[in-house]
Length: 552
Image 1 (cartoon, rainbow, N blue to C red):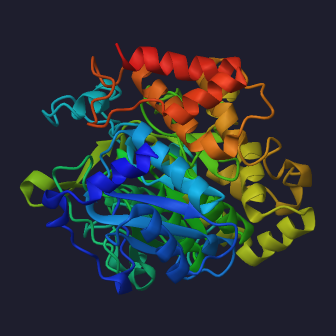
Image 2: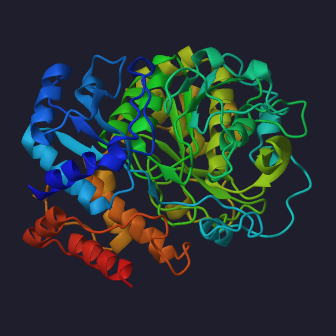
Image 3: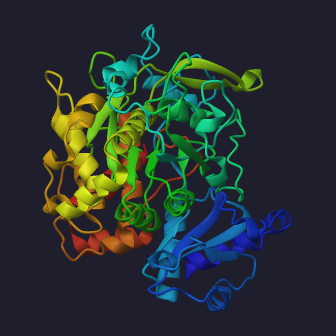
């Protein structure tokens, strides 16, 4: 078939082959910007056998094959990552999905998805902060004006400071895992707050999560900023929601605009296996079967998993879109929706996102640590994660797990129900887009766990494993998919990619050039044919609208 032949031509190019650098397999490196595919087998594969099969299909040995989740022996062991070291992932998305479909068929896989980090959402930045074209989107959803003088206003807004009286240990003993850009030294983050012995660098392998503060990426030092909102020291100019908790930094993205789900999936699993209690994901983009499975394993293990709803494109992004995840939208000091916050029916609740004071690094001044206002649902998610740590500390995690078991639900659902039940609902609040309300830490901690209104049937996704993609199509097209025979398991990843990119273009955050991230986005021939055979109006509207808008 043509897709594999195209890949073969790419792999044997002399100018590429000469520059290939194979990572040390002992370090389990998983670069975010490298050509690759995640293969899901029906059973755990023998890597040697799988490598021989791939070598025969690809007619080359110039690839790496390894478990995506090296320390797992359950269903996560069915996922294998196929990498082509030294070859960037910046191929056209339709070609990558076409290759994935062919590999899936030839190897009889459950799923096969390309490792692509799409530029789905943007990082809000002041218009004057950067001059390059990639900053245009961020400047358009940035709210101009002075930040509140009270640098702890977001804690007051969510009643965290009064909740501290109910949790005087301030989250002590609770570990918050933070998949992000890593961490850099900052005065507002106590070294004792970091559990570096549990940290990891997914991108380069090893255990050093240091953020390189690369000025060529969006929001260098992002991990320090979100960490300060979650666990920043109480005695500083600012404070985290749970300054007594410990943060486990996991470096798994190098640019928060371009999120590859494979390293994030590995980061989520690392958090679970390392004994963390909360996972705080201030990032978002595309999802994957591996990420969905890793998140569900974490929830099943009674971790609380929180994610940012997303920025600047309207529709909520992954992993917040997953029903198992607590999705957090963003508000401002006046309890109104932050203009850049993604929203929709998948959002659970909200927290401050506009002009939140946080740690920052001035990368153009040697990474000098400062304090500055930030905007984005990254800070909303970090706040909720810190409040989750206070809740666990207040009632005792073991006691809360026992209560959840009595109800027949995971701890995640017990926390979600408690947080939504006690959320503060401002006048004129749009619950269908912004969730139950703004999280209220004091009311949450005062609620007796026995009085939390949650039922066993609230757990799970009633629409099945691909319900999130179908809901995404509905939000993007205003049409509900109706073809019950459509193969969502096969085409879901590409459909989600198209729907989110369509939202990105429609929101016009990218100015005149809706595809300004350097990758051509188009519908693969296989998906076009499947949609034609289906005749489903919603799928037809998605592919036709995307193609017409992206061609303008």
